[in-house]
Image (cartoon, rainbow, N blue to C red; front, side):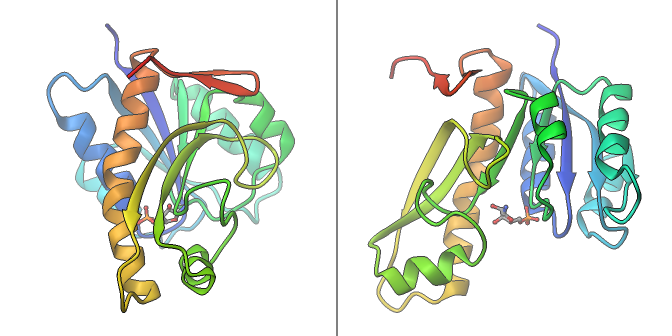
Length: 200
Ligand code: GRF
């Protein structure tokens, strides 16, 4: 089967991008990274893409028609699934609806709990015993959309935002490739408002 062509949108460090690059390098993984787009020229994730010889584009959110430019770049590269990986802009409805059920995001909480920023600080303040991360199809509403996979991690005594973030990030790096694999193998499908998944 042809490998699913991924377009990955980043703004910074790119550790989830790296997890996807590494997964795609494994023999038999059913996806390949066709293009990385950053809205920031200084994003460290661009170096990760360059090191893997993956085409990159920098498209600043200050450009007029920034989302239309991203859309065109993704389509020109033959991208079939767009993965947000630490992309720090909220995308407009036109872009999101244009990629409906072909646009996914990873978020560092167990959605629908703690959407938005500073998830670990809020999770610790709420006293939750379990934290985690979520991969979901993107809808115009922030951190909403059908959930594809979640992974839980424990909150441990003495955890700080940094220690919890590190534990969740390790889970993110497992979860994102797993979700991409499910979609590439057509086992997870965005289906209007729900995701169909295979039985366990
Ligand atoms: C991750 O925690 C991701 O869940 C969130 O932003 C962070 C990006 O980290 N959306 P990285 O750039 O992938 O290292």
